[in-house]
Amino acid sequence: MIFDDLNLIEPILRALHEEGYTTPTPIQQQAIPQVLEGHDLLGVAQTGTGKTAAFTVPILQILHQTAQVERHAPGRIRCLVLTPTRELAIQIGESFKAYGRHLPKLRSTVIFGGVGQHPQVQVLKRGVEVLIATPGRLLDLMNQGFIDLRNIEVFVLDEADRMLDMGFIHDIKRILPKLPASRQTLFFSATMPGQIQELAATILRPNPVKVAVTPVSSTADTVTQGVYLVEKNDKPALLEHVLQNQEIRRVLVFTRTKHGADKVVKTLEKANIPAEAIHGNKSQNHRQRALSSFKAGTTRVLVATDIAARGIDVDELTHVINYEVPNEPETYVHRIGRTGRAGAFGTAFTFVEDEERAYLQDIQKLIRRQIDLIEDHPYTTRSVAPVPLHGGAPIKRPKGPAGRPPRPGREGGGGGQGGGRAPRQGQQSGAPRGGQERGASGGHRSSSAASSRPAGERTPGSSQGSNSGQRRFRGGNGGGRPQ
Image (cartoon, rainbow, N blue to C red; front, side, top):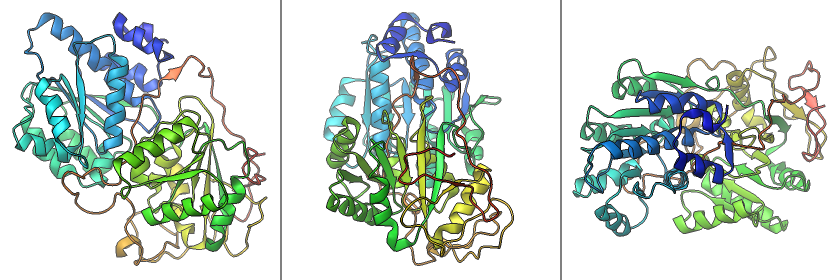
């Protein structure tokens, strides 16, 4: 199937072709026709599936076609896209402009907190048809009388699970009554925990079309995964060692905390490795400059917290490195989804110290696979035992972050950094007004498959199993795939 088969109008097809997109991704193939027919839609899709184009493209066509047959007062907001973070809002806005470049009468704008509202208000006063917003700033401007949602025809709630993580559900519930009941609603989430299912049931019309392009909590076959067992104090040296491999051209390194991200950058700078950090303590301008340098290839390593990196869409991102293992296994899926996108291949390495073995066990249970062990490096240690997917000695689990007991249903495991560790990025309760895009996460440009997308999929190879836990492959500093 190609985009020409999806009954799209010529101006949109022309824009897609100009962007280099000819073949829709699975979620685009499934969602675009349903949205064009006016159905409510529940989409379960991971980062990197082309989700953004799956709703921006049909929305542009709907708004263009209804404007031809109905009289709309110019400048009335007809589509609202609600998203948790400023960077994601910006990149969705870029998608609307890119795919709608030949539909000049459909104007769009993006509003978010953390910056002055005056320029945003001036654009709103001139009138827009599409508004992409974060919850706090939207409520602020609604309360000041600058935004009227009574004419909304299409409402998109994107990254619903992150909305929940970041404490925005109450804001969403304040916004929903301001929308007309006759609207079309598109609801997207990477995962579907119970609260998200309940929210979807309240805002979607009965019997929405459901689209799930991959099993929930799965990882892409295009990403080769590997584990390094390492003592905590050796992680900086191991990272330098791995980055000696020049095949790692562009790498996203994850830490749990903002302070940790800054420490990693200082370590790499001392080793003359170009690196920058993005997290919630960095200014908006700094984050934009850092991301631009990374996309341009000037900066080889981008070190980020989970919220700051959510949805970052960077071409040719060859590697993701989990410098610290996330304490929520679903976060691992989101992290490594930054590479191996839209048919490309990528590699994800995870550095595991002894106290993080429980988190690795949770991850392997969630993705239902054993992650291969990389032993061919100078910092291998016997003090950190491998973690088998099945069997093996129980791993003692202390209290989780912020003093919480283990999550229900997570058996075995152990480690973690105990109750004294700061909460994971995005897990704080509540959200500051205006700056609600706490930590600032990335956004998705469309991941529509370009014409160079391979026709088939290749499953990365793996070595034979080992009695002691992780399957082993010789990776050294990341140059090889599993043998």
